[in-house]
Image (tube, rainbow, N blue to C red; front, top):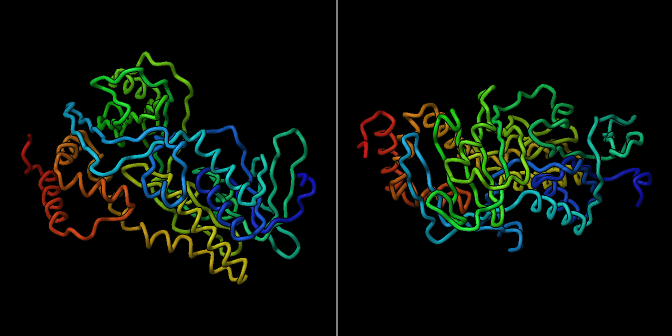
Length: 399
């Protein structure tokens, strides 16, 4: 089917990242005609960490998992290092350049149409149904596609959200920047291909953290901060030096805003909803977003499918309701963690020391790998809470 022949599709999905690709695949597999619109050529800055649950739930093949981290090491402002081994599991690592493209290809296998283009605006037909206008990037005139529903998965600065939800307040952002470099030929004291490095140091990030995540033959080194004027490039250079990676060749550099709170509303009450970064579904404190993006895309697709079946626009709100029911408490807890522990080097120092605790490590990794809070060990939670309060008020041992 030529682009000029494409007069109508049931759903237009704007954005081909994990959220948009998952939404398009889900809808196409359900039998709806779907157009996946993606401008291509851009890779989101991302550490690339994915939990085993994502790999399992979304049938990710082994060849996309470029590394398996067996531990994480946290470094405090005073250079105290806390090793957190993952017992009975791992953190999968993907390269977003290859991972996202594989997801987009899968949408075509599932029956979606894929087109290159940049979303311009939503128009309305005489009966009020949406018309997506996009620039094909070929120097030709813009193209209009009639549809019954639209999913905006076009990132933190979503044009779809600005068009369909103009009165919704944007969530707070962390600006992320990373460099993909060649992985050293041999491990060292400061770097291992099976370990994630996380630096909680104000000089590298005054309000978030810096990271070194192994990707097999490549490595992601990056920094996040919400403070305007803070030099992310300089901090990344310092992070590379701290990890002994300053001499490794740089393959590419990427930067983008990362939302830190789900939007209060994801749909316009008519025919359009947003998912992924456009909906703000990145976990506070950790900045983890791939799993939550894909889940939001899946839930958004189910809500759109119900809307198409029933013509009842109230079905669109189910995507956010279901997401928050599953993960709202996790986001709330992580938001509190970031608010209290990332505010100063003194608190970051206490936070890293607290992570020496075996209960903290066990509950953290179980929650991460399974994407749910661990509820069956109340005594461990009580111990963690008491230690958390002791560190916060300065009563804990300064070990």
